[in-house]
Every structure is written in C-alpha cells, then in structure tokens.
Image 1 (cartoon, rainbow, N blue to C red):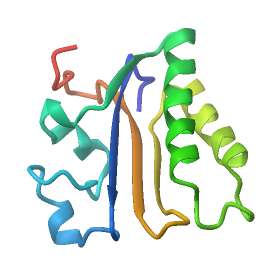
Image 2: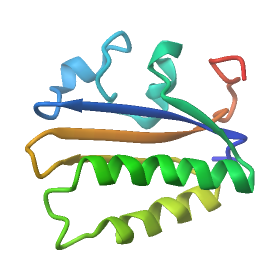
Image 3: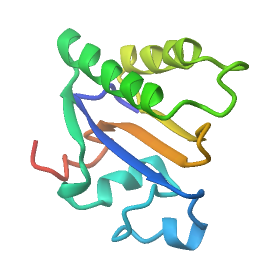
Length: 128
C-alpha cells in the first residue's frame, strides 16, 4: 500500500462485536470486515479527516488516543494505551491504516479506525 495522503477516521461503539453478516453491509454503521470497506460507508460516517502532514499526523494520533481514554481497554493492565499508541504512531508514520477493535472495561465493543486514503487504484470516495 502506498503512503496515505490523508486518513479518514471512523468510530463505532456497540454492545457486542457485530455479526459478520451485518459487517458486510456497507449501509450498516458497524465496522466492516475489511479495513478498506470503511471507505464504502456514507460520508456522514466519517468522524474526521486528517492530512498526512506532521500536524495532521499528530491530530490523528490524538484522536485515536482520545478514544482509548474514553473507552478503556478491558485488558489495559496487560496492554496499556501507551503501548497501543506506539503501534498507532508507527502505522501513521508509514502512512498506513491504524485500527482498533476491542472490548472496553464497561463491556462495550469499540471500533476506531484511521483509514489511509486514497487506496491503490482508487480515488478518495469523499472527493478529498
């Protein structure tokens, strides 16, 4: 995958991980089975867009961290937010996707995604 020109941010929180048959429908607000399929969602599902610049990368990282702080990982003691953010920041530094799907300490399923755009062979679906 080529380095992103920008990232589209997506967030979803539910009572449990959605069933795969629901996740294959791009009209559902649930996280898709494949990362690139977030870009099939309607534009109103995009929480934010961040340019691949030093400032934009910092903002994207802060957006991801804010979600992790709001919805604390059920196994935070074993894999801390700081440790997870090291992976996010590495992904962003390479212009790649950064994606989380986990259960929070309050029992909710949390999905947060920074999806690299445009994808190889495709234009930005949101006319960016």
